[in-house]
Image (cartoon, rainbow, N blue to C red; front, side):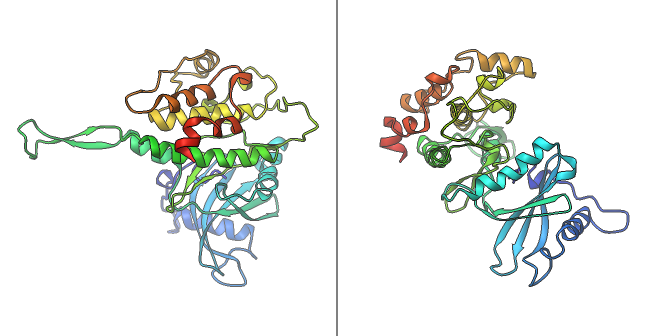
Length: 331
């Protein structure tokens, strides 16, 4: 559910030559793909499609449910543009998310397929995603006095990152851990944990979404269950970069990158290209230490433990939840 792979503010809506907007044309295409589903009133289920984001072979929309009047998300995948492997990923998203019922996981409300078009209807996160929130905090501007002790037109706006407080970090981390514990308990690896796949609700709930790369594995298999190279480069674990077998500990690494990003408002590994990024990931402790004046040793150490290069040295999700910082402060 790349609900915000491209955020709404990044969408372009140029007017078409015939006077219709780009949004109108796309809405017509969505309605034409599923004519019995999209319409202004019942018996159609959904109305008023509005583009929310785009991927290489998918478009994400907000829709309004004609029965409940609630906003939902429609993810339309063009299967004709996908390889067989990516078609499998698109369909597995529905299979895996349908098996999940948890307050910290985005709900799949329905799935439809017609003429090489696959449409997932998903729960709408009304407060955006964690990536956008981190970016806003990192670029936060604060009014700086001019030195005379009083405000004036000469006061300047200066970039001052608005860091999360430790209790705010723990609220995010605890809910993410509960979601990951749930899917790992169902033998599902997410394989694409990142800030843009963590969705936010105004009521304070954190929602894990986008199960497009997820994979369910059987308990009878080896503990090293995966070989497919997938996910987002900045969040890929060392074993994935090495093209080695991997298991649920790859998700733990991605959680460590995500936690570091929330705490530092930037990713742990800064590199100009993929080769340098791989070197950083494969080198133990190649990131800057987190600021101890801002965060406790317990929280910093938990992040570092998730970022151990050797997957056998990383904690599993149950061990993370059992750490003192999580037991005493996070849950």
